[in-house]
Length: 264
Image 1 (cartoon, rainbow, N blue to C red):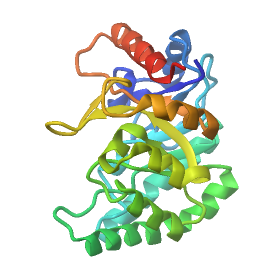
Image 2: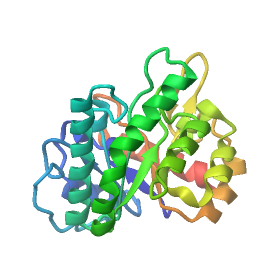
Image 3: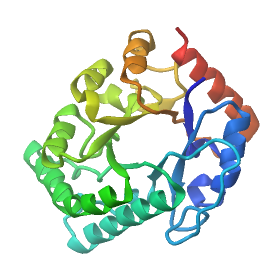
Image 4: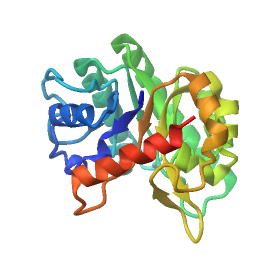
């Protein structure tokens, strides 16, 4: 199974209480090819912390929840500046650990916003992000933008706008989130070589959007398997561990769901 796993499947990650070195070993033990690290304000992947050797699965990429607190789409310039600092710290962390990419959502769309206001939010984020690309290039780190529900880049149209503004940017495509602006296959067709990595996830849309294990939601897996293999980009199953869940039992379910989703 040549699929990695996101750190959110491991207990304590969201609090920065789980070491990357530990996740590396556990991910490998469960048969995952790699893992997506979780940059955080504290813990082993916090800004300024020294890198360590990974004895298990490699960590080729980073994500973060910090940009859920500070948004590049924010109208407040001080909060946008703080979001830029987070991105710069992610780049430095990725370079220190030998990771080749980072990914994040620039931020939410304004509540109840008109299409014009959403476009303005995207443009604010792009203006804020543009200066970080030389830093990323010198570090050998690709910056990828993710599609998240209720965020400014949750539609293909919005993502295209950001990619036109930021030609060096790539995409972290979340398949479950893509169901909100289907068909999911259109994201693969339209974004093509701008995709840097994929989040193997799934979602239900009725009665409300809900993330679920792969192969249990609305993502049309049979029609996606061939395009995903042809795309040949890193894939990481994304399935956040429920509060209080038994981690080994949950990881077993995640592995089985991943195998069903990617089965030929």
